Length: 31
Image 1 (cartoon, one colour):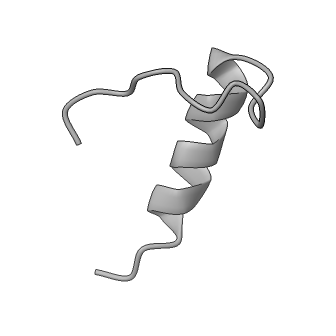
Image 2: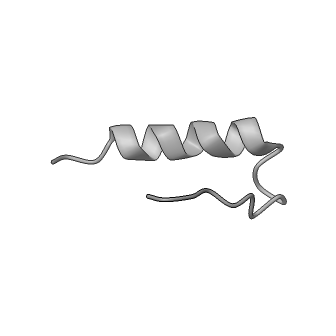
């Protein structure tokens, strides 16, 4: 991943919430 763009503001309340969701997603990927 090279960048994060704030998108889907109808679902995520702010950038912190968006980044938190990405972190959760990345932590669930099995290498």
